[in-house]
Length: 153
Picture (cartoon, rainbow, N blue to C red):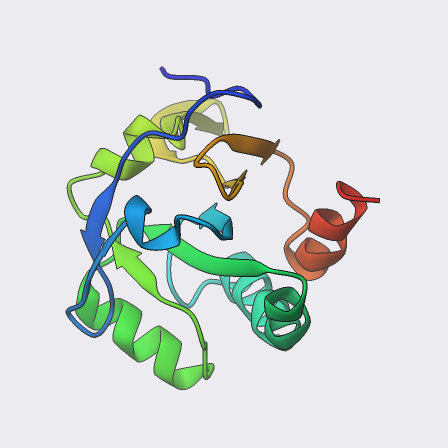
């Protein structure tokens, strides 16, 4: 499994969002990007995380951050999820798990003594030059924006 480190160049990605738009890493040149990886639309933790980022979206934007979510769900699932919760940022449908794998957010998980492959909830903050500035592996879904801000105090 790939393990990204702070200070390393962010892997290039491209994908399709909930509205059918092609999105690439290059779209965020000159901006700070909160690239967050989450397991599944409409689950409690993922909804908490998305809504926390939504509720703080204007402030994040003022502070120079763009927000982009990635999960293995389909465009249709993302469109429904984003619509239901009025999410103001794109969600990439990574059904092939390429972006998740390239960013080390797809790997072995354990639950109830069983191992399986799944999304490792992770957030990468990529700076204006395309370098990974921060990596959050222990995401506080209800207070994710505060977690991000504390990294820049």
